[in-house]
Length: 145
Image (tube, rainbow, N blue to C red; front, top):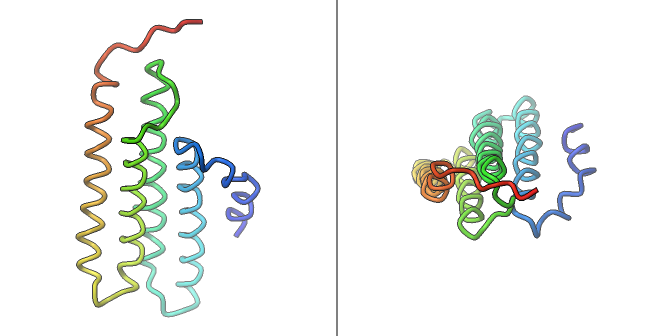
C-alpha cells in the first residue's frame, strides 16, 4: 500500500506524453499491483501465481526494458526519446505482462494466454535487439558540449 501511495505522489499521469519516462512509472505500478495481489492471495483463495508474475514478468520485465532503452541511448550520446519502435517494445512487454498475470485467473484459456504472453515477451525483447544492436555496436556519438 505504501508503494502505491508513493507512486501516486510521482504524478505519473504527467509523463504519458513521454513513453521513455512513463514506462518507468508503469513498471513501478506493476510492483504495487503485484504486492496488492500478494496480499489478496494471503487472505483469499486467489493463487499467488498472478501476484508473482505481476512482480516478475510485469514489474521486472517492464523495468528491465525501460532501463535498457534509456541506458543504451544515454550512454551512447543519443537523445533520451522513445521512437515508434521503442514504444512498440513497451507495448509488447505490457501485453505480455497483462496476459501472463491474468492467465491463472482464467483457467479455461490459461494455456492459450501463456502462449500469447510468451509470444509478446519474445517479440518485445527481439524488437529491442533489432532496434538497439546498431546503437550499441557503433561508436557513441560525440559529445557536443
